[in-house]
Image 1 (spheres, rainbow, N blue to C red):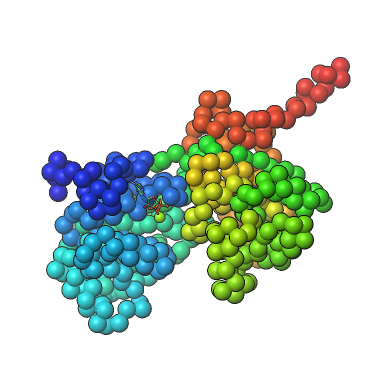
Image 2 (image 1 turned 120 degrees about the horizontal axis):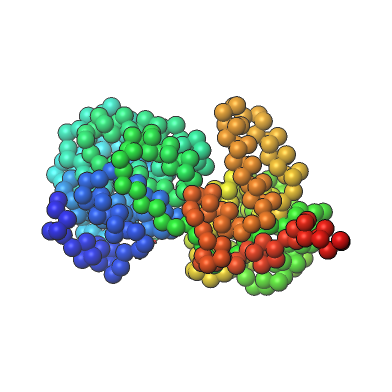
Length: 420
Ligand code: ADP
Ligand code: MG
């Protein structure tokens, strides 16, 4: 398709009802339409889906979208169908479909109705599907959550490693990788494993200027410290992350006893209770949810005002994702982490049961968390540097929004000078 022939703004309005592209979307879409291999790195909520959905909708053939979670695929298919009068415009191909359903999917693809075909990586490797996909017109292959290909990411999935070989079998089509993981190591892995060093890369800034970053030393008084913090943020929504289910229960109870409306959330609770507690938080029946990292995937509460880490996270990547749930509306979000070296040792011990390669990666990621906790430089600069991004700690957006910048640590030399 010729870029000059289509007005992608008009198409954006027509399909999605939006009058403007968000961030780098327009550039990404142009790159995809021009048949370039394309690599997109944008924070969560940045609007990555539209980057491949729009080109898929306006091009000839079917775009294959690889995604790791069936629930996510179903959501997207429903969303796309709601924009069209044609039900077959988007389909999911997975093992739960009946023979009749599979035939319908194939029919819609063959007749050119289907613009987006969502597949789980393990389905794509099925010989039967590969043969079929070779016989139809494929516009491109989009690989969402592309960090799943890397052991350095937070969600390594071995099936992702086979994708490039399958894509080659299907045909010579452009590949689009998308991820919210910004660490240079993961990016290298993605480009290498998808064999797309030639990809046009688009990377959005990961800076969240309205988030305030703070680290406090973890002491015996942590509970009263947290209670004091929450009381200073009376009526505001917040999340407290703990490492273990037991700690979640403990802290939730301590808060309740102290008159703070809080509920626990972890994978040990039954599905009904989990859903209830999540709803109570979203509907503001409670102010605080105390949770393990099981909480948060897909939570889109715009006005979360603080995220507290009772225990240190296992990587800066996770820390960024977890704190990123604060201040979605652009308003302030206070990100407070408690740090003690004992916790680091605990996490290391935790990992020592794992295979050596995994351990090494785990230790290396943890060391970065330690360095972040112990640094006296701008925390925002430190975080962004970890994501391969330059940040000017004097003039950058949100430059004064952390404890180190607001209250610079008194240097040892300075103290000595005073003594003399
Ligand atoms: P990501 O996959 O990057 O986390 P999504 O694709 O889920 O982000 O999009 C996040 C939100 O942004 C969605 O609610 C989506 O409808 C919205 N969105 C995407 N593009 C635009 C746009 N151009 N204008 C307004 N809203 C948009
Ligand atoms: Mg997404």
